[in-house]
Length: 225
Image (cartoon, rainbow, N blue to C red; front, side, top):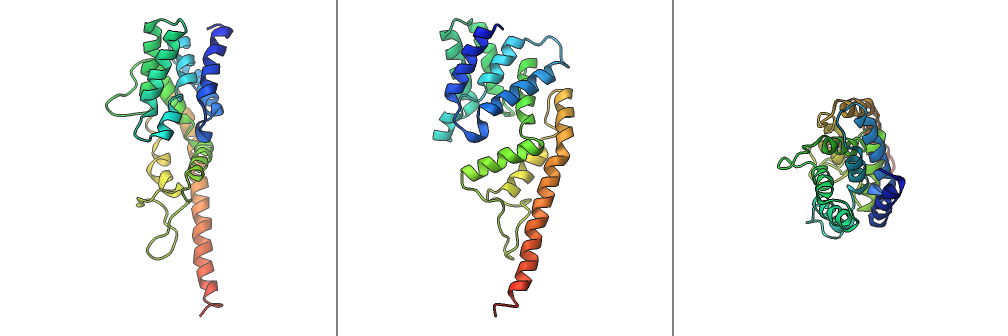
């Protein structure tokens, strides 16, 4: 891919990105992670991979405005139109679209091509480790969701059985369960290197919150009767 083509695609991506947790820096991290993963694979079409990485989240704004929409589906259609409108072949645009549509995993449409599998893994890698924690906290804050919820006893819940959205709930239902869902060996290895950082943060935060409530409630009884 020549630089002029890269800049054309990059500029379109920059016009579409408005979500703080899925900003342009997320796109670049996914791209760089994808290139790392791709080095361990064979027969990778780097033009397709780079284009799909740059455009994989361009449907986020539509989904944010209408949660019933799937940003992967919207983004795939937008990418196809943009590429064909700018002189790329329909075959190339379709290959890019298929990568984008499959990057948000659904059992009915898992990634098939090596480029789609690499994009999937690179995108999920950005939800692992310390980065995954940071991005989740940004998102939760942006939509007004709390760090944790309280149980019937008035103590902080660890999130394992919660239905109410919170950071602790998100960690237990999503973040800690990502590590066996990678398609490439390189992606799995990179994710495994990050796992302990996310767990340590969650464990430390829960311990701090639990101790604050446990000790604080006892102390409060000395002053409020």
